[in-house]
Image (tube, rainbow, N blue to C red; front, side):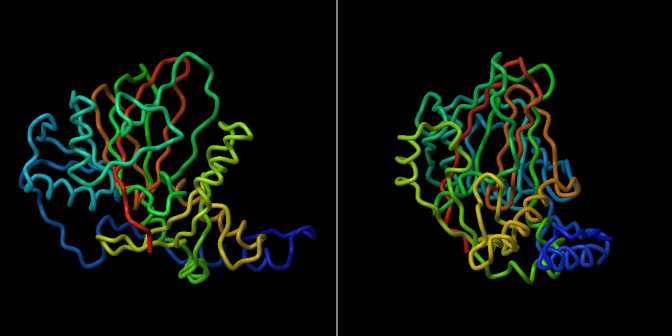
Length: 312
């Protein structure tokens, strides 16, 4: 039940009641595969699910060895079906990490993140200094006209405890939105802007430079996955600023509700890193959150990201 006060606007009361009434529609629908897709076994490796709708550990693959087209096709099917796939005990070099990424497409660079040994490797280093910020749920680089298709992350140095990463299935999040909310957002676009996510790291001159270099872009609030066809919620708190065509009050209200969906445990998987573990995720279908709970221990990760397409 929604409790209202005299300070709540009539429009917000109507929206809140619509959402609350729709939330009692029934239990959550948890589909890992698109509707009508038949589950098939994998022939070249074992896929061990880690969550109900998202995440699987791949066993029986040595990423140091050549990857045949048949193996690449099976790994790609696992990526689409599980949205994020994990590998243990893979002491690959940064060069090999890039080679694997290029099997899925062109690699992108990120001007806001420190580079590793190559411009296509983003290095995330945390050490003894106090953490400057806590992470948030997000989808990578949605401020680009064509956000990344996916990313491959490898841990080079792992803290003795903590430092897990979580992923959320945003197709499951969309499936379980109240009908009234889906009706309100289907067909709409939202503005994505690099500045909210990175402004705290830039001085005034660089802020103006990046604003000119990376102007805001619009993406569908709900994108259609280009390979699976699934409808996927595509807004995130780091970069999405408003829904086009709505008054600011309603846009803010709806975005708060949509951002919260990644926090639902039924849509999540949590991965505990070990040295030389690898995660490969579909950036078109997920959000992720790097848990910052290991200070003052070091954590070093390296990522390659694969260029994607323009959402529709």
